[in-house]
Image (cartoon, rainbow, N blue to C red):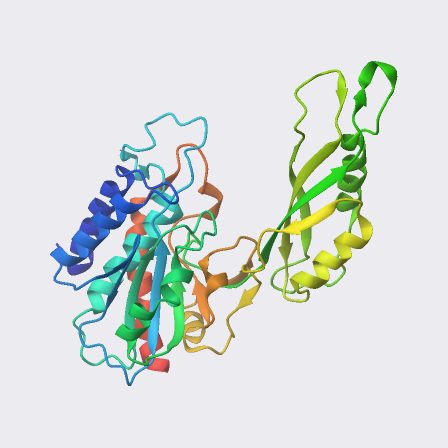
Length: 366
């Protein structure tokens, strides 16, 4: 068995254990324990911050810059419609089925295998740091953002700064060089309660419908070559009213706004407020649009390897990094959060090979 086959076999076994270890967002302790133990069994000293596990290459040199290998180990709740147990890793015709197999277990174990491959290298022109982090699926504050701003973690770096990152997400091993930002807004419309039979009150649902129609028709003109248009979609609507005969006094809805690099969040929010009756409250301004330069060494390396590049409509932990980051990994984003989520075994092997080639080529162009 070749070295690549050996580390692939080990990575797949780790992924199976991860699938069998429920790790819903904010409930990742057991899977973080599993990953930490796996690294330690491979002779790697680990650091831990809540449910975030990290490690530095053996010959870490604070005088050199660093590349971060990052992916997440938390998952969403299982979608309805699974035909297998989502927490039982199941192999069928080359597919490994199970919750988190594709998003982002496959990319994570591939990055872990890549880190182990480079761990003992003494001739690296940069450091390689691994971070398996939490709360990505909920854009939580106790994941990679917490780690990158933690004094203990920064002390371990001894002044080394990040020249770039590989963020492991299912991209079919193509380069997602840009991401749209994510702005989630909670909207509230106020009417007046009344008895439905007597035509009393002002129906907040009808007022909200006017706003929802206005959002559906809103056009943000500035189009990005990589990220397309900024879009706003209403995804949730609700009232507190449980009685069929009461006109609701309030109606709430949620707007999912995906923002390209031509707009900042304040501009988008001001435009929505000017066109809607609802009170709009943003949940966060943290997940802004991000882009890595096409002449960055990592991207140049990918281009040399013949990898295509694109702008991603989805948001990842890349948005929380203050340094250039490339989103790339095995698997297919279209499978994420679906019933019978899966990744091909061959995709993991190709992902490990691809990551190693990408870093080797980055070394040559750095």
